[in-house]
Image (cartoon, rainbow, N blue to C red; front, side, top):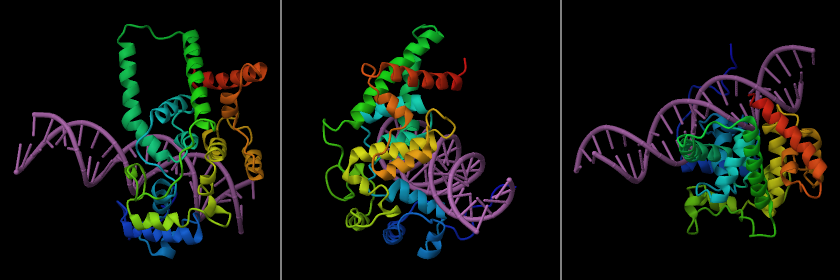
Length: 287
DNA sequence: AACTCTCGCAACCGCCCCTCG
DNA sequence: TCGAGGGGCGGTTGCGAGAGT
């Protein structure tokens, strides 16, 4: 037999969340912090499964989430990261601050996949023979180069200012791009976005102070713990990296380090890591 | 105006991994 | 060492809105 359901199916409400339920959930998290989701329905009186509460929080109510309106840059980044990481949406999301894995997944399934299929169709209909292995490797190199550039752009601090983390969903002309449909919820959150204490409650919120550290930190946590669980090259040491993250200077994951490696200054190291990654890629996509 | 079709997205489901006793 | 429970993740579904006929 499989696992029992995470919650009793009896009396569990399903379907869209109401603003009232959102407020209750936000109030609870505001008071207790995210986590211990099992206890949330019982403590709040919400007739929702604990998983549903967690999903609602992480995908919708969490402060700093940006929804819809993917920029060209984000789109390109997603395409390249998907090529590198596969459908590891949480890992991909860690490279895009303020985007949730669910949002990226939806964007991929509804927009990008079609786009790429259409592009593929154009390519395949042009009577071009399938690439040989050498061609494939060259193509991979090209894509990797683009991914490198995209990641550098994403992590760049001397260019345009990083997108501000805001929870004020109700105001502004681009309010449609943000989560939270209930103004009072966003008001509640805006008063909470700068927590004085540390701990789980600060997860993803304190990051607002530094978009860069959020990008690298989140990427490290997620890429190491999720994207690369089955991939030793991509996950050099989850435990070590989490310690380092606590120490304040989050190390880059192997793939990030490699993407950011300057070939001209560290040619040997770059080649070494690159060969490892290529080897993994070739093993994953056996010809 | 009414109906059908298509699309986008929020939410659910089931599996897997990690932690803890 | 092992099993149970909690949480995370990716795949899938269902519904509402808009477009088309």
